[in-house]
Image (cartoon, rainbow, N blue to C red; front, side):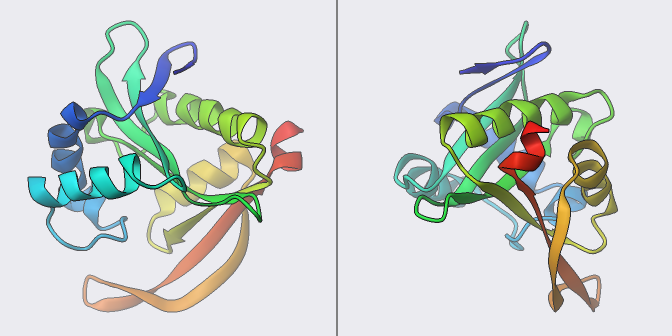
Length: 178
């Protein structure tokens, strides 16, 4: 368990799946995820069993209120490459259908996760793929944490009747320590 001032990150549990599925199926959330299909409970459980429980290259956390223990969102490190010491960052705040909130939940969850990834797991780099229209998360990662845009995958994602670029953003451990 990772404990901050307002939030804590705990292991994701099977009991969290119905709420996560509800959040992930929200149209304003789903458009920002790689999974394009409407999720049902079988799909959510299959992901949990294979990726969360059965894959050592995935570490997922429930973001919870420190006092009430209410589930607020989900975050994690996926596709961990233990040789190259990097991982794909995953994060969303479901609380109040925020996606990325203005109350500091996402910011504190990231700080806890970055400390865990860089200092506990000794990762060198955290990266994420964001679609060009996901301005809220792009602004959040660049403004709050100094993520750098590493590359562009042109016309990589189809949404709303057109092609969008995907951006790869990253943060290196030495940039986090600063």
